[in-house]
Length: 418
Image (cartoon, rainbow, N blue to C red):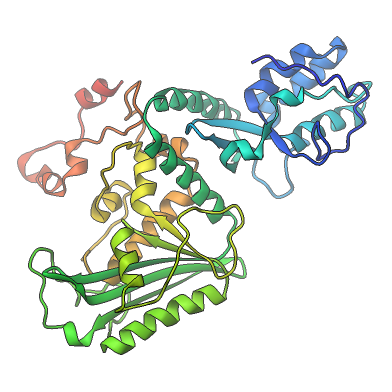
C-alpha cells in the first residue's frame, strides 16, 4: 500500500517515542516502511540514507541504531489481526528514532517527514503483538516471505484457528515476560465413575533471580487405591519425577487448595492443562473446591492473584494449523514435539509432560516460523495444516519400522508435498 506523508509535520518537531498524534504509540507494517516510505520523500537527497539504513544487512548489523543494548539482533514486532493474519511491524517509536538519528548524524538536512497517521496501526487493532528478534538478513527476508504465504493459507479457515493462533502468540508474549507461575495440573478419576478422584499431579515453574525453578508433585487418594482402571492403563504407581504421596480424601482436598492459594499469593498464575474442561470441573467440584473462577482470555497485563487458563491442546492445534474441533492426545502432542514420555495416565507424569509441551511451544518462535522449523515443507500450498505421515501419527506403526522394513520417510512422500 502506498505510504503518504503527514503534512502537518513539515519540520518534524515531534519527540521520539510519540507518533503522529500526541501520546499515541502504534505500529507500521514493515513492508510499508521498507518499500514505500522512501518513495514519497520530498527531498531526493534523503532517499539514499533512508534506504541504506533500512537495508536487510544494515538492520541486522550490531551497530544499527535500533539495536537494543544486550540484544542479539534487531527487535521487530509480530502483530496478529482479528482475521488471524500476521504482519511484521516496526513500532512508531522506532520510525521516530530512524528520522531523528538520520538528522542527528547529519545524513539528512531535516528530520524526515513521518508516514501519514492513516497507515499507523493502533495497538487496539491487534489481537496480540509480540517482539521478535532477527540477527540474520536471510532469516529476516525469509520470515517476511513466510508470513505472507501463511496469511494466504489462512484465508477462509474460520474463526477457531484464528482464536487458537491468537492464544498461541499471547502465551508466547506472557512467557517472554518471565512473570508469574506456570503450573500444569492433572487429575485422574476412576473410569467407571468420573466423580471418584484417584490422583492429582502438578508441575510448575517460576523465575527466581532470573532462573527457572521447577517443582513437581503427585498425590494418590488413600481410600480409592483399590479402584482399578478398566479402559485406560493404571499407572498410578509409576510416577517418574519423585515420590508419590498417599493421602486421605480430606488431606487431598486441602493440599490442592493450599497449592493454588500459595501460587496466587506470589503473583499471577497460569494454569496449564491438556484439554482443560474436565480438570477445571474437578478443581471446582465439591471434592476439591480449589477455585471458583478462572480467566480464559490471556491478558495484556496479568494481575497478582488472578488465574489464567492455558491449554496445550489448543496451542498445538494452532501450531499444526488445525481449524477443526479435534484435539490431539497428550501422547501424540509429545511425540510430535519430540518430548519423550512414559507412563501417561499417571496424574503426576501427565502434569509434567503437559508443562514440557507448553514450554516447548511458548518459548519458541512465532507460530508460523515454528511450524516450518519443526516440520519443513509439510503444508499444502493453500492449507496451513501440517501433513503428518503415518509413522508419525501412529506409535504402533512406528514400532514396526525395524521389524517390517517400513521406512519413516521416502522421497515420494517429500515429492508429494512439494
